[in-house]
Length: 382
Ligand code: GLA
Image (cartoon, rainbow, N blue to C red; front, side):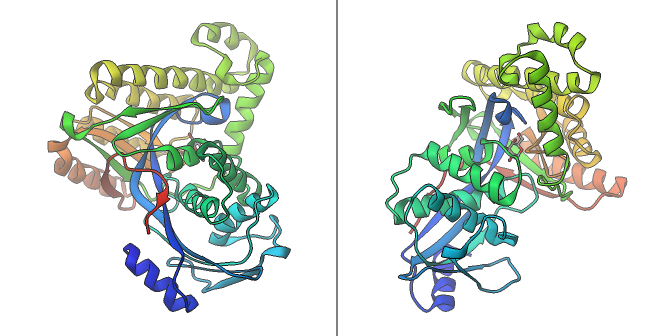
């Protein structure tokens, strides 16, 4: 659906025109996985797949919500009786953000909302953060809340943590809110200081191909929380505030203090933080054609030390590397979702064919394969 169609769907449903349309993107994380909640570094970029909300404020306390993908029809709630414990389904994302803003003292009364998204859900591309950030951006303006982008990041994270129940960090919302066209966002998750890093893949004759394995993950219930707990245990035993404070030089000593599994988890975070810093330096010195080895090393670390990959992701990465990719890695929380491959633009068709054949040979489901490039962040579009 294009913006005009989204506005039309809103009008047909609610009987009046929307006050505006706000849009926020999903993301690919170029490198820096599970480092965010360890107060470390990440380097994501927004992709041109977005969640868009059309909204009109009402003069009562009723919220009516409809999406182009939900199967519940129009969901009607009274905001004055809204509890963060009772929200479920897709409406937990927009209503979660509204709940957090109201908890913060932002005045938000009733509203009508239509939501459409082109970010595939469960693909590790932050479909939930895209919804949260579109809604947060919209109400920041509609309620004249005056929150900064970094404050909106924390609103989205709090909705995810307290309403949806996933103990995630600030990577996804930061990518969605801080990105600009043609750049990746280099973010220090301890201070929220960020820097835009030029990422002109086309000029280097490159592109990034996403392989969505269609293997779904469930962060609220899956291994994500267990990985986070291991990291917190590691930091506690090592006597640091967060694993951000551990360096490669400390790993020898850490090996003697931690059980083998916790040590591997810690080693991933420590080496991954360094790989983010190295990637930023290499991008600046030599450009995107030289970061492939860092991406592939990141995948090996997630596969072997953090143990969040799966056979489908490994096959996507291995097939890409065997077919001209400069580097490849899984992206996002893991346990399924998507891999990314940095490839010469001229290799796209051959790689597509190779990945489809490899998945078919392995008896895996057909993956979805598409190119992405750094796109703009959350904004009003109409
Ligand atoms: C998910 C979470 C993020 C981050 C990544 C892993 O996308 O939402 O906060 O932890 O996993 O890097």
